[in-house]
Image (cartoon, rainbow, N blue to C red; front, side):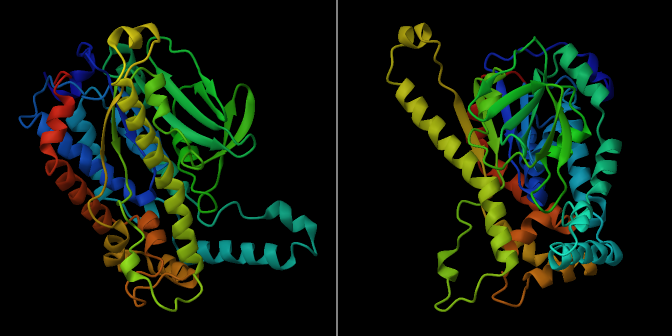
Length: 408
């Protein structure tokens, strides 16, 4: 059967439903496409036309939400889904994500300056304050053309996928809101500062989830009949793995975007200068995107160790179950990789970031963390894809062992 007709294929019932967790990271999320491409190459090197998706439940946050939706919309054709994702990321340019021309950037800069310099004198200026440093309207248009949400609905109906979940952060309530679209009538759940809302996922959910604070504008979303302004779902997200478990996953596969050690203590200077806005911004983004998923993953591993000490009848009586996990993270610093490709960024945007403190001449890394999240250029994203694929291949034994109980 041709892969483009595979949306009619029967449901591939998994003995142990696998949840895919894709974390945030801006441009770093190209790495996730490479990892997933490597996983599919390992599981189905012959590209069988009847190959079933190894992931029943797909959850994404921030830029990972875009990858999650891209995969879910073509879950009936996993290899085709990855081809689309690889083409999207490798063909990316800054102008396809946010307006990077000199005039728009200058206009935004002047509005910020005017508000801070004269806003206290003329309160009326506050109503015209800029909503973000960058305008990501091009991303809205790109996603609208790229994603087929009607096919997502068909994938859920025919069993090619069980659920898609996208998490955003509410600025008004401070809650994390997981918008989910699922088959089987899964009931919404609520925990402390977290709630799940059934929804028909669309581009607005992805823009809300990926609205990096201050960098991209928040999005107004309807939550239980009320408007909630939502921003990046990675902010204060203390349980990023939780949605997949609520949606029925018994195994969790996580693809992160943070190198295990982005601090580089060997690079510390004896008499460092005051940190630039770029350095502070990069540190803030790293904290937003990386710290919570790492701690949640560690907590789950500790719980699994405790459950392993219990008798099977005790687990069943208490409705407890261990959740097997596997995570793949970058094997090298993405900060350093980004600086290699910095000059690919449009001159106007590069000038803006140099004003904030990004420089390739100060030890080669000044502001590198910030750029690693915002460098939406094909040369950089292709390097991330290659790294992701290599990291999957280097862990082939672990990948095969993890998926061996699932069909495909």
